[in-house]
Length: 457
Image (cartoon, rainbow, N blue to C red; front, side):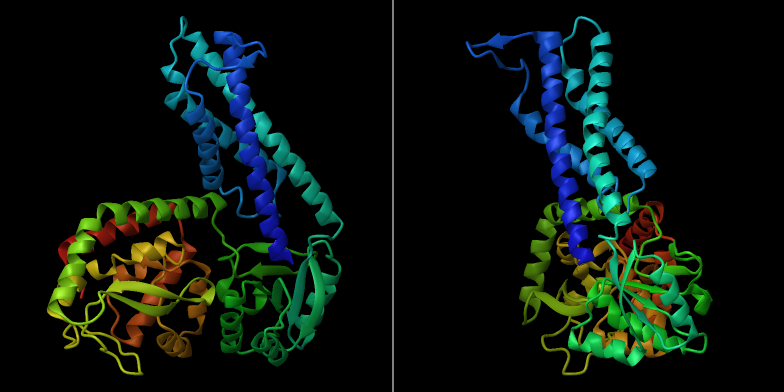
């Protein structure tokens, strides 16, 4: 229910912003016509601008939507602060107006440079006011619905002791955010998950202090693929305190594990970069991709592209794509890790692995949203189960999309043992907790250095 409402709200904001941006540009055209041109053609007095009409009519709204998305405005449509919305809309209006000025307005032929200034000020005012007022109206309506409890998240509390009862008491006093639909013990929760009958938006793990840590992570691992918010009381697991955002209730704080602790615009820009970089890479590298494909086809029997199931975002499986670097049918029923002198690797495959060219098809995974350029490396389910036996916190990396590269692969390289996989996971968690655009750029530069030096295997 909450997830569906969230998506509907995103669509409402998207449609409203698209219509607003079109109205803004038309209003600016009318301003230009009235002040600069004053042209009226035909009996019906149809306004016809004296410059490029149709291209900006399409490109301006598209540019606005691109900036709006990059600002992170659509990530949390049901939890907006009025101050943040005001600032975000103001900054977006300034960026859009400056962009339109240098791309379109600066080409005008004017008799005075003051005309440029007037045009910019008018466009900025139109952009800010016309985009902000509909947003503010929708947000105020949403806040009113929230006060009435219409947007409360269906919540299940897990536990069987004193801590669970305390959380129940606090949740019951916060009906604006939480609609308590039940409380179960751990076994009952797992039964609901296995039967597919967990009808909830939020699950709060209210275990007592003596609950084994492994039980905590095992439960998280099963909940992640369901796309629900996973929360817990931080006093029980101090190791995570301060690394995630806290939603405060009346007394006891509740930590949301699945929430991001970085600003929304960082996630949006990261995804925009992924889309543009992967699309551009596939286009520019297409001759190289074709040459590699022919080399793989000529030098060994079997498919050119090798697909493999991996565990990715939210713990859900997906097909990862690579150029085949091993002989066909290199594995039997039991998955095997590769090594530097693995006899299954073909001659061309060894060269591809050295420069990591075998992973170029994964730009397609990035483009369609399965992966990111920078993010924790995904593993196969068979190895994930082994990792979690020794490092049950592995499931925490499900918060992010897996990546082509990350801090883990740079520090550890190819992993031919479970110990190295755990070591790489530790670095990936460090990356996740320090996520920033600057860190992503740094990791990409390190990765390029590794590629040019041919340090892969």
